[in-house]
Length: 254
Image (tube, rainbow, N blue to C red):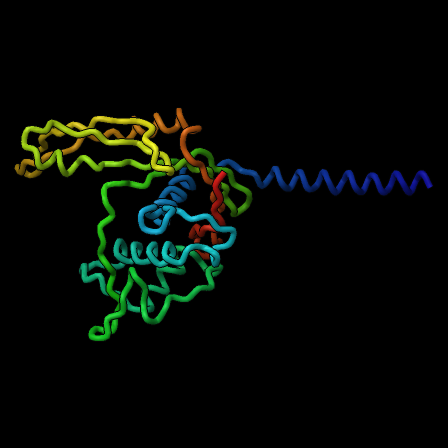
């Protein structure tokens, strides 16, 4: 009887040890090239809070995600990469291709044949026209905090914040203005930090332009040092081994 118990315990130990060996050998460091690909992909799917409540909505399954966000990201993809003549008119096939590119085969939703708020069908040209709309002065921003890898799956933690440039138009209209105040906010709309953006003249091809001082790196550093004052989110991504494209699996606030 003791021999049987010993054998059973040995099997359990071997099984558990094998699991940990598999788990940790698959936990590999995310390379710089992978981080660059992750950053590009997140930039493509990160939208605007003002349009559909969250720049990147929460969901456990891509098919449960906010459809306004899905189709807006698709039309943004089309406008940026599939619009060489700047007509902003796209076929259903182009829309399907962009959808697969961003969300892969796990997204089972089909683009409505009548179009959406962002891509309206035009009977005359038999294509979908991208809608233009103003987004205001708030920029939705994120910073990648951590990235871990397990096989072809990635777990990404991001911190989210808003840059509010509400004062920029008034400053531009004032010829004596030297710059303007802008605000870093959390997702609840609370001002966390105030910055000053200074105007200066820049010459490009002998043409004079008014340029706004870039404070991006300074802002990122501040947000990282005060991350407890902002929102964080865990994003799961998966790399398709056949296409080498990243696709989002889930998104959750923490």
